[in-house]
Picture 1: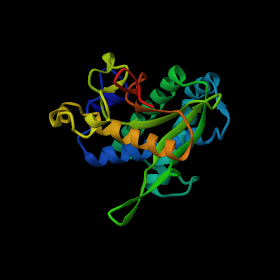
Picture 2 (picture 1 turned 60 degrees about the vertical axis):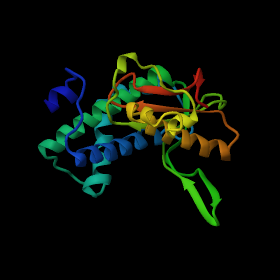
Picture 3 (picture 1 turned 180 degrees about the horizontal axis):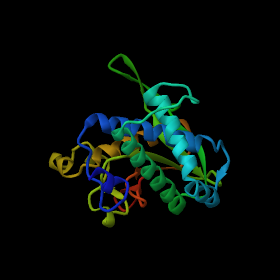
Picture 4 (picture 1 turned 90 degrees about the horizontal axis):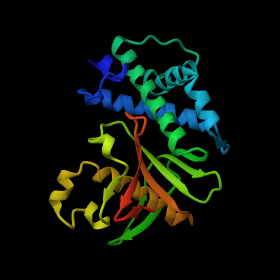
Length: 238
């Protein structure tokens, strides 16, 4: 069932049962995407670049091997690794997810420029009750359009998305809704509130340090149409 769901794509993938598998999948996937987009530097990424990557599965396969070596096996890049059956299936799942992201970026993002991958450079110092706090986090991917006029935060999500075919965005009425001020029961009905709050927090950090127009978005990597912007009220969250 795992093979046919994740590799062959015969039906929508179901949730992994093993929490360790979830953590490992996320760790390796993030490392692979960091290597893929880190290689571009500050060059503008065009549709031809992503089409070329999608056509070179052997290159993507090697990148995922590299991620496994660094993050799981803890060996040198030139070392030979032997996958167990479960690890091999996990690798094939990650490959499918990486290709989904590239396909989604090809459809929704090009041309764009990478500003940072797995970056934690944005922080905010606060004083609360005599205590000094530093707020921060790791942004999966920060990019700009080719003119550098609009910036986008992309936060990867490996979990499933309900009603994927009907969703064009992640919507909420206002900021108080995310904290349950409107109706605490709303938070129980919307599993994406935490996701929205996280990526909005990253956008807050960026805008406090830079004079940017920032569009926060979520990338549900199980789907080729997985990039969803956040919509607050009647417009995009910025």
